[in-house]
Length: 459
Image (cartoon, rainbow, N blue to C red; front, side):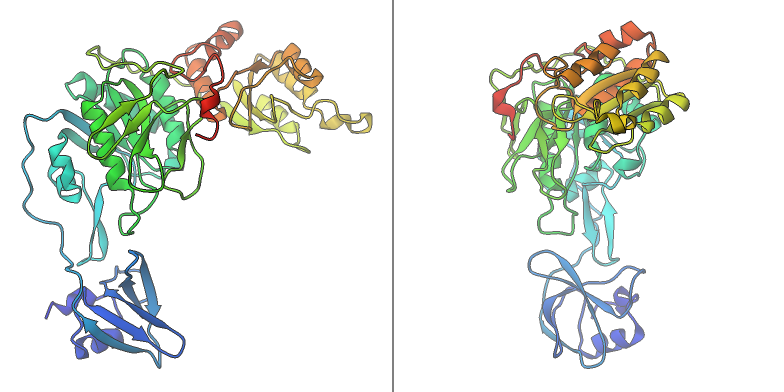
């Protein structure tokens, strides 16, 4: 019988029952009472949580904790899965394959459950990656696998983005065919956008951001296929630039290749959450290595080359992204102005509206005088739309013209998040009013398209 230490974090009474029933880790058991009836494979538990809760892996891949109490019966109904720790021997890297580098920024997507300890084993060496996802050993070899930091994506800010840009440039300039950055999904679009600007000078190889919507202990885990497809792109694709590679549909069929400045997380939990905005995807990639780039894309994709990338990480931190809505208080503009902010992006309604001409009795609700004050103090204000799709236009309605005439810059079809980060990057280089406006309307990394592509809506 396996050592009972594997059940060490269960209560003494639960351990006694498991020993009496000769139940071992991984055995299939049934837990039943008048109110419950569960079957599954019993797992060791980690050293936190309720020691009376028995952890079962169910047939659908999900884990469930079942509280043991008076009246609950436990029986062993068969041998189950083999619970092994991480292997000690690894496959060799093939010298004939392209060499890429992997940079990890948070909870890794390349991991597997070590059920003997109840924890997640992170795979950060090339050999461990090949064990976690064996197919990788036939796709690429790894020049470097580095954990830059271990942070949730919403906790990243300029220091982390600078580190990502500088390390990606270092790897590309020292021989890597491409770089894969594993990243939390919630704010992956922000990192993809700022890296697109910071790395646009001389970038001639792929920098691919990827992640996982589902954890590695679930049957619906998507990280393995995302990493496979990202590795194909980094090592083999005739492509240059910062892109996001994630599931293209709910099934494990293919991944979409989306431009870093034109991609957004559009669903809290779907595996195909990342969708292109205001353009079609750059292409698709399949886990078997098939790569198909989009024919006649609106913004042509750059092809792979050999020039060195020059990281450009200048950034002004005193920027803000604010949302206009009915009843929104324009004093937020005054607050930012008085705090010394250098630039503001407004996520307006429709074509770029804010409350501007309310009834005379409620003139205090108008954003216009507050915006004018900020502009008079040399603060850049750019307008985007909370509609996500489409573009802003300052000429259609009176209120739009009033804002435009005051000096608000309407930012075409740029995503609000992309505009926010581009503004920080631009202000890091210059704070001269006319030059900031010119650069905000200049297309650096495909963030602006000249004409809306009708194919792109809800792609």
